[in-house]
Image 1 (cartoon, rainbow, N blue to C red):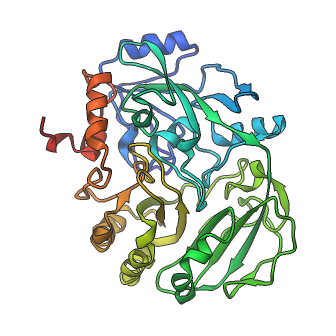
Image 2 (image 1 turned 60 degrees about the vertical axis):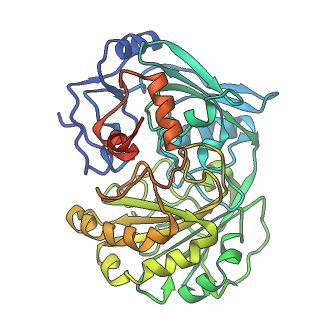
Image 3 (image 1 turned 135 degrees about the horizontal axis):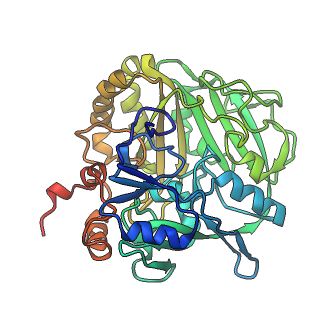
Length: 419
């Protein structure tokens, strides 16, 4: 049976797919493998997870552990964020941020730098306080905040071992009221970019590039149950509902509730945990990060390619997030704008347009999301200034390359490395 990613655009090529039932079994399997990578929920759109052997940790029974005094929760890496959100909400606690899809595994999302949204919010990995992993010899060990290797070990692309558990920072539960406004003028969005992106705890702007207006301004307001205004930035408020993104190519009822107040666990993600997310897998995705202070210029540069992009596009989404110190995070070194493309599943056409987008973004030192599509010629490692330090860390932790794969070596520039 072929093993594919969620979107079906990547077929993995393992000799074995290993499904341990205990942590000890997993340790023995890793120790006995020449090359091995973790198989999560498959929400990456490139072969970053491919290897001679794949190991899925979903059948290993690892409990949730809540430490209210320390304000942390320890969770299995294989569980989806939706399960963590449900557990924490029941206990009166919360995470600071979620990605659009609660279906993605905690370990996979953190390893590839998934970010969520909010001018004051760090990427999901900034909540990590500790990582337990199986090393190349099968040994189990923790790396914790404050230790020398920690900032290089969080967004680590699976290159340092098989993540088994993560310790995450938590805070008291809070409510979110999310409102959707439609028909935000492109020109007004660009003219008032800072005001738009700071208008709520979490802000997303969605639309297409060639039209005069953007389809959706999505404001997620924290602990706010006040009656919203009829318009924001000239965009019109939509009535409370559960539905699909306008022009987003998604199923009819997969959004979290709009216009009503509820817990962060049921409002902070875009999509419902009990429904197929986004366009239901009938899609491809790319995303590039640019410094927030160059966001408007970068958007203008891509908009010049609107007639090349829109025929292949479901929808684009724009989100900002604050900076951090995690070596391979999109936010390492400063705040960023994420420019996301949900493509129609037309891989040949997508491959043709990606180099044009990358060329337009070249003056802004773009970073590509580690788990999504970029062109084969894009130098993915160039804008991540701590990549040389990370490669040194990989050589020290995994000198035999147990957790390497061709895609990872290409993305990190192993072939261009000089020692």
